[in-house]
Image (tube, rainbow, N blue to C red; front, side, top):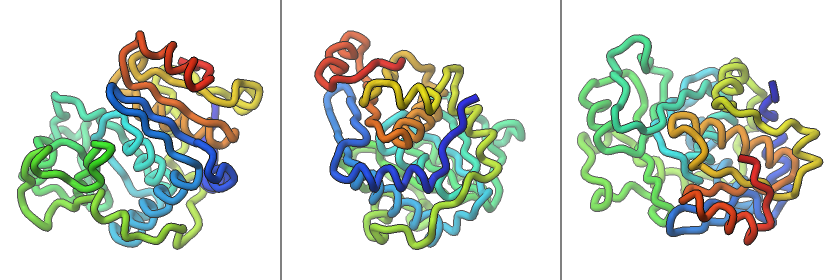
Length: 262
């Protein structure tokens, strides 16, 4: 099984990439390109927020109730860099029953990050012992947009993650954690039924690798793409994600001079 690289290696490689592209995201109507420096700064701000403002400690649990998106990728990478144990819900319409002991069962050390108004309302009503973060996954909307996504209950009870992170320092206030017990469970989740490129394969491969979200199961797309992103960046390469129609993937690969991994 391919191991996920240590978070500090990922930060070092992003720093080395500088203004060169590290992550390119294609949606149905958008193209977003983030350099190594931008990714590193975004990760650093998010890690600082999770550690210093939310008090997320190594070994704490972070539940990702988010669809695949460049924002959810970087938030997942930040939680992983904190040494958190990651769980992925996939932002399914049929939200898991949070009263089921086999489902979420959060504790006071749990952080739940969601992009769904309906799910946040359900979580709020249950009065769970967890920190609730609302994350807007619209690329050009950094803060939670009530007009776009609907009103949130309990002002002050649910934290607008996108609005809080920009004020954090651009550099890490502490070094990223070495891989915690999250490693084994995350590595299994990140595979999502597919193999990540090994370090040798990544080094021998084309400089830009592309993954088509349409070829991934919705529930496993975020954890797999997170693992792919971390592995690709650690090899000094650029990761391209195409969350659009299958017919567009070949065109995008040609335009980006990318090898289609999946």
